[in-house]
Amino acid sequence: MTKGLRKGLTSYGDEGFSLFLRKAFIKAMGYSDDALSRPIVGITNTYSDYNPCHGNVPQLVEAVKRGVMLAGAMPMAFPTISIHESFSHPTSMFLRNLMAMDTEEMIRAQPMDAVVVIGGCDKTLPAQIMGAVSVDLPTVVVPVGPMVVGHHRGEVLGACTDCRRLWSAHRAGEIDEAEIAAVNGRLAPSVGTCMVMGTASTMACITEIMGLSLPMSATVPAPHAERIRIAEESGRVAAQMAVSGGPRPSEILTPSAFRNAAVVLQAIGGSTNGVIHLTAIANRTPHGFSMAHLDQVGRDAPVLIDLKPSGSHYMEHFHHAGGMPKLIAQLGDLLDLHAKTITGETLAEIAARAEDVPGQDVIRPRSNPIKREGSMAVLTGNLAPRGAIIKSAAASPHLLQHTGRAVVFESVEDMTARVDDPDLDVTADDVLVLRNAGPKGAPGMPEAGYLPIPKKLGRQGVKDMVRISDARMSGTAFGSIVLHITPESADGGPLALVRNGDLIQLDVAGRRIDLLVEEEELARRRDELERAPRREAPARGYARLFEETVLQADEGCDFSFLRLPK
Ligand code: FES
Ligand code: MG
Image 1: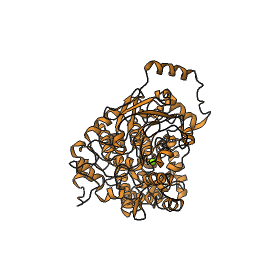
Image 2 (image 1 turned 90 degrees about the horizontal axis):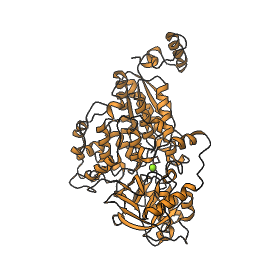
Image 3 (image 1 turned 45 degrees about the horizontal axis):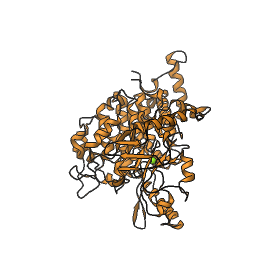
Image 4 (image 1 turned 90 degrees about the vertical axis):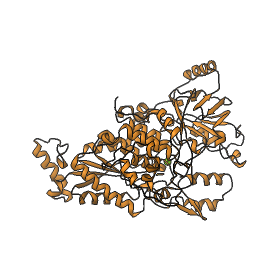
């Protein structure tokens, strides 16, 4: 097999001339013939002035390069799209597949024998893994790492669970302007990803359990020296993979790897977004990720990690308590410990080296879990024929069985306009319904599922209500919230049929979400809806591609043409 600069050589006349031309151009960068004769490790550079989560990427790229060179190979960094949660209009989810395509095609287009992808902010690791899996070139993932925690008046703060909590307190009049302004400068005190168990941390943990990154990669804080050493070591490993040609993602991402990912997703109290991303990744392999299996796993796998938003600590505490190797050791036979990682080591070997940290209470033993069952449950019912998710670990126990009157919002805009209206007919026992916020509806499935508690109820001390939607929710949020209702309302889902005052029944123990309206009446409403004017599709561009090809949440919201045909 051809390696290095000869890889994927396009022919400009004879092959010799093509290589001559390629070398002539790249030598303009000052490389020697020796450098250009080595196996090549590509490194994605996702630094952007718009992406504070990736603020340490330049340092990590440099460290990966050092590792690659120490092992005798040639590093070549190249840019790909960078996506930050707060700077991605309309949503970062809208751009995830674009990043996956960019990553895939740039790995394919340029000569490299292995690739190191460096990412972290929510959608970036999933996008990079989706792309890398489709190319199936030996791949090492280097997460950028979580931020360190912030402090305010003796209290530990984290992005962005505490952003929501303190903003709610501000809305309720408990925190004044001056204090909320001070908090604003303390919530994200360093580069790196949100340091609670949000989507970024969830996906970093999933990446580590699936064997695509080195041990401890998920948890070392972004500004720590150890993070840089992991990047250097990742470069070394990638160089060895470039020489040996493996393992490839297809050898790592086995059915066991996905089963282990489901167990870890439950045990860490992971983000509901992780379900969508894992499904998208799995659908690019010959395997799959089933919601029914995730629910089944959740009945046996306890929540062992005590992190916000469902618990009380932050990623750096998880790290200092022993990180993922310690969690693997605690989960034991719930995992397939024979599963292999990029270094060839098995999870059993990694767990055997896990550090014992006396007195730590972040990683619980199975005998003393945070919660006996996993963190999320999969619901179905006449409101969600293809499924919905609830993060039960972050919900109020008294609302897990609840029947209430629907208070319907037609869209995110409608919700924003009316939720705080003092005349809104709503009580704490009602069920807030948001629709037209799914993959196509909004578009890009915004994290609007965390509907705010109407101000007038918040002022009365109401902290939680049942809220349901076809939207997603930030992994850093909490509450009794049913998400990802599939099919979405904009794609013919029954959520479109709900009317104000209808009764909605949530039964988490029975895994059901139902609209208590006669089938005859629903059929009448469906008829009416079909006669109503249709929403207009975007006229052109990426938005058009998105609208035409995005799959529903139960299929990972990938584009239909990017899945591996099965
Ligand atoms: Fe980047 Fe939270 S905003 S991980
Ligand atoms: Mg997020």
